[in-house]
Structure formats: structure tokens, C-alpha cells
Image (cartoon, rainbow, N blue to C red; front, side, top):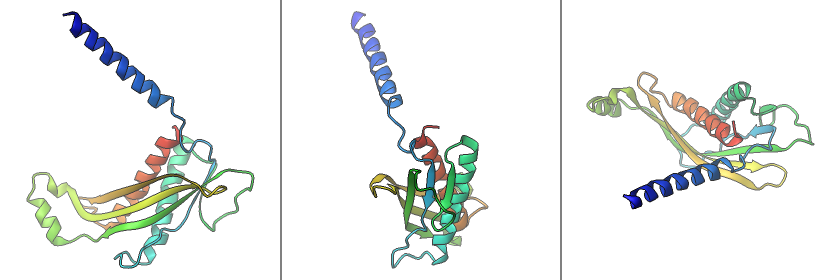
Length: 178
């Protein structure tokens, strides 16, 4: 009986220790008041059209501005080449590379409709590799891959791109400490 209580106590201490270690971690993007989004790169051989880079950068800017207003994340969220940025402010630069650009197809939609609950999933997908760079030093602060798909009646790659921009905004919100 005694060893069972010791095990529970040890488990409790271990869980509290992990939680305090996670909470004690400094947020990655806390010191950046301004974020600049570059147009995404599209590697040769990728089926994404040339307009994708500009569209995705706009979607990221829109989603980040929306989250920034809601959670007070940044003083400014701009697309590269947009408005002037004060030289005395730390700037987080976001670069991306398109990894996947999958158009919806009727064949995939029919296949998914045969799976219970599959009719709610889309067949379009968008994936990108993102790098978060300290503009002053050029050092990569963080990098990640994000893949999103369309949903049900919104089965377009544009909707998958919109969801990717929102996923990026949520990730930044998490690492900004909000």
C-alpha cells in the first residue's frame, strides 16, 4: 500500500515539475513588436501558380492583423515592401516556401464520401515551410512546416491557404506568449 502512495506522489511531483518548466520558458517572439511577411518562394516543379506567393502573403498579413488586434501581439504587421518600418524596432521576418499545392478533384471527393464522416473533409491541400528570422542578425529564430486542407463545401485550395494563414497566426500567438 505504501509503494502505491509513493508512486502517486512521485507522479504528481513529476507532472508539476514538467508544468513549471514549460511555463518558465521564455516566449520565442515576445521581443518583436513588428512582423514583416515576405512573399513565399515556389520551387521549380511545384504545381502552384505564380500568383500563389502574393495571395498567401496577403492571407498571412490579414490573419496576423486579425489576431494582433484581438490579442495585442504586434505594433505593425506588414507585407515586405509595404510601409516604412522604424529602424529602432526589432523586426521578425517571416519567409516561406510552398511545399504542397493540391487542387481538389472529384475522384478524391467521391472516395472520401464513402468513408463515414469523410464527406466533411475536402480534397484540396496547401503546405509551406516557414522560417522566422531576426531581421537585424539574420538568425533563424524558429522554423516549422504547416499543412492544411480544405473542408467539405469549401473544397478549394484557396480555402486551404486561408486556413494555413490562420494556423500560422495561431502558432505565432502561442509563441508570443498570449
